Amino acid sequence: MVPNTSRTTLGVLMIIKNEAKHLAACLDTVAGWVDEIVIVDSGSTDDSETIARRYTDKFFSYPDWPGFGPQRQRAQSHMTTDWVLVLDADERVTPELKAEIQATITANPTGIAYKLNRLSDAFGKTIRYSGWSPDWVIRLYRREETQYNDALVHEKVVTDNLTLKPLNGRLLHFTYDNLHHYINKTTKYLKAWTDEREGRKKAGLGTALLHAFASFLKMYVLKRGFLDGRHGFILAWLSMHSTFVKYIDLWLRDYQKERNQ
Image (cartoon, rainbow, N blue to C red; front, side):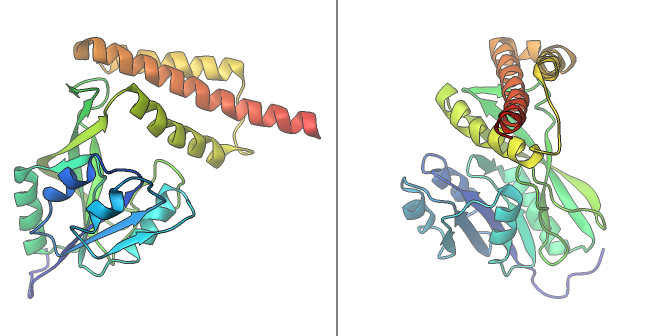
């Protein structure tokens, strides 16, 4: 570790769209102890901007959508702090995690990125199995040392030259409010997944079925989703459906291209 010779600063990085329901509750858990909050919006039509501006003057809106990785890069380009804490609007920093983050920033090490363990809630129930817990995500790093990659979906922090370390405090994650919310949220991810692989990955009906059934078995049996009760079964079934949709979408795109040639 490198000794901290001056006060180091911490900023929160967020990308949002139509997060009025969750945004204030998230920002309440960081307001007052972080030095900067940067929020990049991709076209909200609800009260997200009004809420965001109560907490920060660094609110930026862009009409285009470049993908999750590039959007997070865009948000980081507006930041000035030494450290970056990445949050989604449906997440909450617990007091224990806050204390650990503050201690880390005070120590001000170099060459280290920190992963946080999310505890997720789906449809009103805390999910402790189903492959959802532990759920380690890299969210704390020095701004000048790294950023997110270019992936359109399932983007990751580039850690090639960094050491990864965990923090013990939990990051609460309120992922799906209801089934309608799940459908709206996953539709964007599924399209981005297919967009990224179109023309580079082949799929067919058999492939779609195989991956779908494997997804259910992994989540419900191998990852012990049955211990999450009915919610575990529902999540495994929804995962199976989503997996089938993304692979069959990939096949349908190729099929339609071949017919149009």
